[in-house]
Image 1: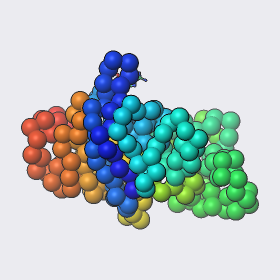
Image 2: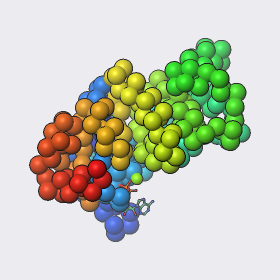
Image 3: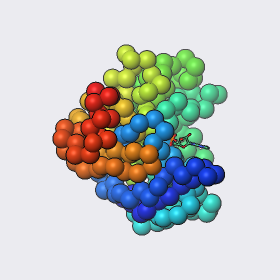
Image 4: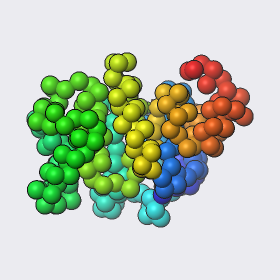
Length: 240
Ligand code: ADP
Ligand code: MG
């Protein structure tokens, strides 16, 4: 579904991704872990063209991601992104936020989109908040709207960049629970997270990123329970 082939990315002279090669298969939940500054967000942003990369390939079902090509709009509808800070449209209600992409970008029928958007909001536990503006919602509720908004595009995969790290502790659980449900439904997800316990529960695979390289990857139960690489071991000791 998502394939990285020797991906290199620099900001000016600073090389941030130093040859990333990895794969996310359809239906897999991959957690991307690693220290702050190791390149996790940059890698995620390259997948849907929010950043470009200098060499190598990122392929979505065989189609090369090129941030500067017209095809990037199509890629972004196929691979949805959920941000750390929700990024909802402040002047739109929860329901309008979820409807915006399918109506404006995909040009779908408004009545059908509304029915589906309501269904997605119910699914993330927000049946009673559909007509609230983001400012009237808690962080956890806003993040669940953002997930419903991503789902409304019927993406082939969802990228999530630290989806719970901007939340108060009591709201982390409600968002993780939505992600757990999606994982059970085999939604393909690439999730940057510091929630190692959550990764243990839901991830099929884990990538450990260290200074722009994937130092270790494999089944979650191997990488998180019996890490082979000394840097993975050290990282896990620090965060758990
Ligand atoms: P992580 O998400 O793992 O914390 P990032 O991908 O955000 O790491 O950042 C990796 C490195 O790239 C850091 O050194 C960061 O300062 C640098 N970086 C990220 N975005 C930019 C940018 N837009 N311009 C310059 N440097 C950047
Ligand atoms: Mg980051």
